[in-house]
Length: 495
Image (cartoon, rainbow, N blue to C red):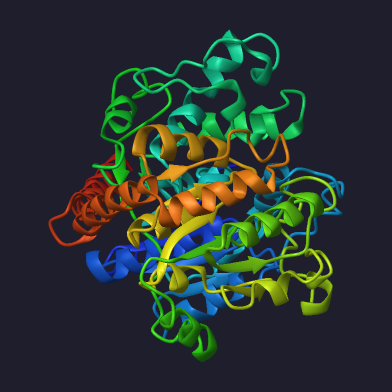
């Protein structure tokens, strides 16, 4: 139901600066890009920003990100009450996508109340991918509204084209023998589809289609990439095949937006260890803030690292019990040093103590990647981690687990050329120690790794140029600000 949240303030003058309200869904993959977008809007484009956060209350890293933005106070941050998922009828085995969708849906009342409590209405609303159901509040407030997609252009193209595929494709996507075609883009292999497309009878598929359809309610899309990274796919998204049907307004490239490196982020012991290692000789093994693997796969990974004789830092978590995305909301819980070591091969820590370092549960991934001794990154290919790796000039071993990571891995291997990957998807088959040994050696010590390192350093240079003043992403956000002002004028004139 439409209503004027700020009817009592209708005579108030707008502040000179545009005030943006940003809404983030739970999880580091959404919170970090929203936070960094907010900082960028404030520091480079003269906005005032209030960020509304729906917390997952599970991740230590998530809490640290919020604290870092509040001290010193870079942004106004409002933490909304955590929704009661049990009252919402969500079962314990619900998928990550369904849980996120329900959490955001259940937060609508709290978000409305928080907006109403503001001293003055915002001038623009920006929601992340799981917040599309809140775009209607932009209409209620009579302000421009945008969707921020914290991923890449190929993922966005698949998402936006999914309602068409839903009508055209018969049966399950993963059972198709033909590639899934997207207008103007590289087609998608059935085995690379995003998690919500794995089972068309599952509720998360219907949530996914809903999001795809609601994106067109916005006045444009912000995308965490830069023009040089995916020029052809971006051109396709701006073509008439998408414009007017799935996209209502410009696609603004605003990336790479990642956390800044913290000077003291490594800590004394970790920094001293890294400083002792030769340049580009260390393989970082990390699966982001919400990734882990089975006990059998964890043991094979340990054996592979040991057999490779390559230096490594492993941010280690206890293995999963059920689904690959099951750790997303509770990865920070439990698992002390003694418990974690019980999942490793007997004597592993002793045999590898001269070349390896194990960090339990959580570690400063970005700060480690920025150190000169790091030469490779075994990663789940989440988009935050991918950008952190590219910006630091580090090639990757792709180990996709869930969400859009299989598609990301294919993009990074076949189009961008900055990863090597196992022959079989880790989500389908246990990757053996011999193959892990080979991959670790290849990325750090072999010719293929050196060539890939040169390629990723070229991308690092284009990424740095994109976000500096006059660069493509800087100019894209400047245009978004000007378009926003024009849209505000049009809305005010219409009313």
